[in-house]
Amino acid sequence: MYEFDWSSIPGALPFLWDGMKISLVITAQAVLIGIVWGTLLAMMRLSSIKPLSWFAAGYVNLFRAVPLVMVLLWFFLIVPEFVGQLFNIPKGTDLRLSSAMAGFALFEAAYYSEIIRAGIQSVPKGQIAASYALGMTYGQAMRLVVLPQAFRNMVPLLLTQGIILFQDTSLVYVSALADFFGAAYKVGDRDGRLVEMLLFAGAVYFVICFAASQLVKRLQKKYHPA
Amino acid sequence: MGYQWNWGVFAQPSATGDDTYFGWMLAGFKMTIGLSLSAWVIALLLGALVGVLRTVPNRVLAGIATAYVELFRNIPLLVQLFIWYFVLPELLPASIGDVYKQSNPVLQQFLASMVCLGLFTSARVAEQVRSGINSLPRGQKNAGLALGFTLPQTYRFVMLPMAFRLVVPPLTSEFLNIFKNSAVCSTIGLLELAAQGRQLVDYTAQPYESFIAVTLAYILINVTVMTLMHKFEKRIAVPGYIGGK
Image (cartoon, chains in turn blue, brown):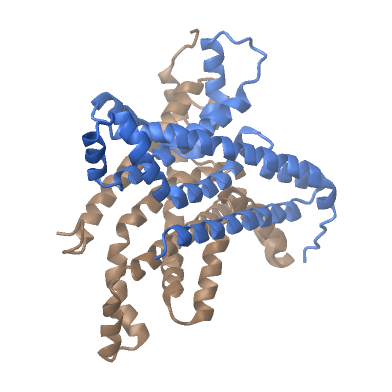
């Protein structure tokens, strides 16, 4: 029978916490970019200007057809070299980490855009007509009437996607970014205590994600009592 | 830019000499399909069972099913995979663990990946099955019971035949996800499509061609599955419902 030895965890906590901070930064950054860029994509997709709507549809469908692992590998192995040559960035500069983070955000934006598009479409059409009747421009109608209502409806879904995204950050493992999972793996590998560290990492993710999803459920009941 | 495009690289014999680089891609493609389909069978069977259990009046059974779903939904897939692959064999009784550890490494990678993907997806399938059952009008269950069916009979003859047809469209997106999620299994060394892509970059020094080919292969899988499932959805749609005849 396997004999557990958890003694390497306490000493490794500061290192693991550094990793957790990286995971949280990647999550926050991707949620922010994802919502902003996702909103723009959703508006393009619903726009009457055909090329904009084609671009948005192509972007979203492409990113949703390809695994996140593949996107991260693209942005880790291929994009840095390409961008470096394009902008004549000196060879030694390490673009790989910022590139992997950008790729992650661009990927998540495709998923956010689908949520936001559904949110915009859930606002009754009469609202836009009323805004126009009041003399608002398209931009004003979107900003002042449609989007505030759409976002209010979407809050639980956006937060749930945020939890999924936090779990997805563990995949930056393929790009050698030392996030929480990467840190846990390294410690376990170094101390020959992979079993304990992996179980510990799983437990930490579970506690965080479970607590967050219970909070979202409460929020949902508060805003939309069934 | 000084990049030399060379699509002919796929026809060249591979570094190990027994295959072409296209053969490597094809092997990865087959592995991704085989892994995803076998995991999907596990996900459907377990997911249907757990989803049904979540709706039964028995609190113990429903509680166990809820715990199952929460456990698999709140731990990242990568962490689950590493636990299946690195942790579980250590925790097995030594006699079984040793047999497993001495077996073919590819078999170990495949088994861990299949079980991991299957259980991970089964929790999502269970949620869809549960919401399908809950979306049925309550009168159906009551009518079944009023006609003298027992609860299992009501499920078997009244509720499930409807619910399973209603959940097909949402399950399509889970089916697509399982192919995409299978790429995570490249991290434990299973030579599926994404891993072959990485290997092609290392061996051919043609990164663009390699990654474009692998990405197109994923898009091909995606489009094929969507087309097939769309046909299936149309055949199985319930008349009178949105999307029905």
